[in-house]
Length: 267
Image (cartoon, rainbow, N blue to C red):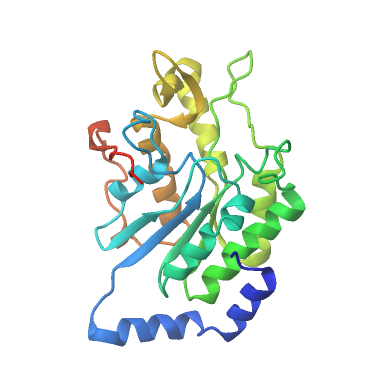
């Protein structure tokens, strides 16, 4: 069962304040606790398996840019929107595990845009923002820090070779919500659009899941996932979500061979 807005708000009122919770956590055991960065999102970030290779979610590459005492728990799942992730109980699962001092990175919009599917569709300035608030309030109620990330851009160019935005009003709605709620914002949409523009029409094919049998302009291969993960890590540092001691390799070449695809889980 997923949390209602009222339940999340009630939990927030009764929760221990963030600073106090973090202090108590640090004092317990007298040693530093490994923090976790949870990812709630869609297929562009999700863990991929050997049956999908070389498709790669940027969440698979993010650990390459973070220190070993900052763990990544990637809960992003193919095909989910901010709404369906909640309705399927996936936000409940994250909130059941998250602890004071952890982070919840939230990236949705690709599937919120699908107005033909009422199970996933949200409207940018109303239901999309309403659902995102559930993630923000839920993280804060548990002493964790929410972080909003605008959706990474697709590979889309006009006839003149200009990279074209594909997410409509959703990035603007998320930016506005971040400002209203005082939440850190990673503007991955703007940064990835600028990156695809620099790389160009032909060059970007080497970053997306283009194979002999597929021309996928939404999902990434290892170089693309690494490039987007680098943008995310840099934004986490720039926005002071993380400190310099939390990140690594921001200016280094990361080999695509570092990516691995585990075997699919069996029932």
